[in-house]
Image (cartoon, rainbow, N blue to C red; front, top):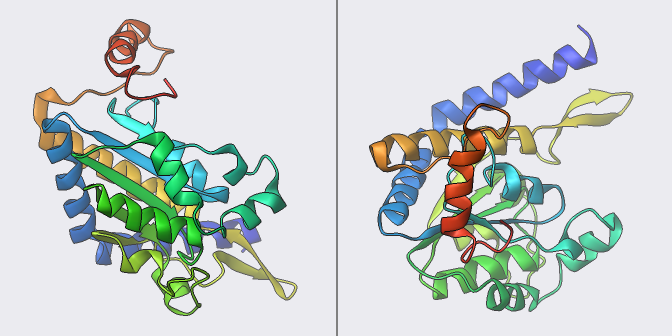
Length: 239
């Protein structure tokens, strides 16, 4: 078996564990999203480092819900990789981000962090809860419970969320051992699968009222999408 085949095998195991152990939490998350959409609210997303990819995963894409507002902060992305690792540990940063993004209830905030230990994520969960948002964390429970918090409160992401979904990965994320080191992270693939499952179930729960973006590369796609852009542009700053 090649290392590439080993990765697929390990990822399949992760996805199987998610289906077997996280179905109830995925259902709970979808129900919360459907409720917010029916009430005219938004679904907010936020992550740092590689987890910011998940903040974009369900935003403005084919099959994605229209009422999604990512909170994207360039210093916390990988534009300057080493600096972003430092920035995500800064206490007080999350409060400033939320003041600027100004999310309002009714709303859901998805937070993505494999370890859930850094201050920005911990504080983001706490501050969002104070604003009346339903906070959903997608994290690695095995990793998070085996490491110490870096936040002054001593708490971790999963302790401050209304709903916690385990991405069922291993400690350190990488899953294929080669030459005494590990490669093949699973958190992004697993997180994306969890999110897309939540989106599909949310659409199902909303019925025919669900607003879903089309691919811009299919006939009539631009016309469908433009209507949603006009509707949400004033509320979703990245549209």
